[in-house]
Length: 384
Image (tube, rainbow, N blue to C red; front, top):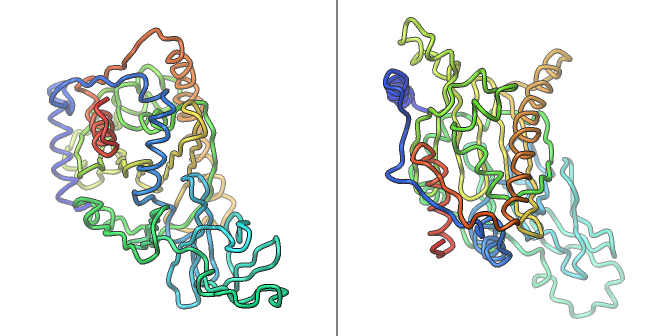
């Protein structure tokens, strides 16, 4: 983030502190409970949001050199991203063109080729079919037509994006998609970050409820009073939209305790947390010394989801002291979000099934939450 942006945000946050106010939406917003419970709505989200939109797969550090690869299965299309000998990233449907088996699992480095475990069909890192065992049985096979199916992939400023249901020739226009947010994301230097560790959570909630967790500071004092609540000012944030994406800045209590407010501009991140919602399913939680990336995916029913949390750090954790430090940070995030937010959310999800209410209400003091759900409605072409 540019220094002048942080300066403007600091002034805005001090105004909220001085006046006992916060960022406000123009009006309250109601959302039908069916947005979280409808199988038809879920199917539409899977088709449009998790098929047609660019999705963040991870940071470049997870694909450090030729032969490095990651797989991603939760968008519906099984995704494989691999760095070629030429250093370029390519993405494919992780599906062998013979009988449909996966040609890679998990993540790793040092791949020289992609080989199907079923019958041994083998592909080069650029997706070309290079070997068919027992090829006498496939005389006349058009190998070019049986290459791995390419997907659109873009690597920029340390971030890797894939559009799950697209041809490789269909480019991702990242500047257009990020709607003015690209320079701000570039300013963080994520290409220099290192992956520390990841966790996968499977709460029994709708995937959007998992995103909602990060979109308002209203709940901090009540829900998180035994964890992160004492650290933050509840019901106070700065809020800015970038197309369908959003930036929210939450405030640590230390900001209100400053005697020299110029210090807030000099060391903004010491007193705040910057949260970016990258539509449709990713949340960056950026703190002074690390980055959490939360990615939410729908399950096979409206009350199931998969959440991937990855922790990225500015320097490799090569000492035991560093590993303990980052492990503690990772556990703190899980304790607050999974143990508190998601467990509470499971009760909410069960309540939705009771028929006790037909809608939920978002207050004007929850502008990021309102922006997210308005953006969802527009993207899906639904009214409610």
